[in-house]
Length: 142
Image (cartoon, rainbow, N blue to C red; front, side, top):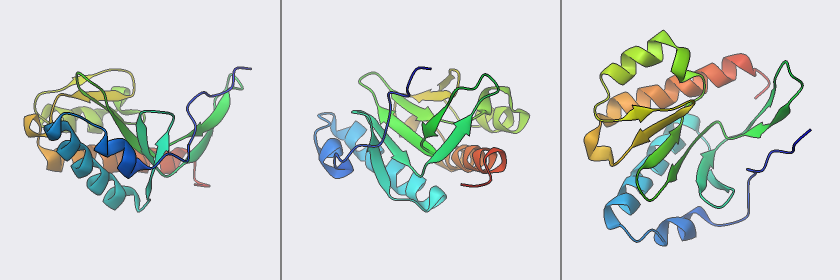
């Protein structure tokens, strides 16, 4: 069974964020840290080299694959932010929220946004809250 590659690291989130050259992306990253900290009640940690994650849960699929993941997180990629939202691709409530979000695209479990000014950050916060609630319902020991 393949081991999960993305794990918490000891790298400082603050140090990681200060290395972002694009000042707007750095400011948006700090705003996401504040929002996700508020939603999860958790302190951010680096997961792998580029993901800022909040909280942690253990998952196990029917296939037997299992591992740990952050409860909420994002990565300030060069082209756009990847915001990790659990289970939202097939969820009607999440679809309804995304309809109100603004300029974005959705992948499997990832919401892609160029900059926070392109979206309604209140709606984004509700999407993160919905994702966290979904994870907690599926993995109640966390």
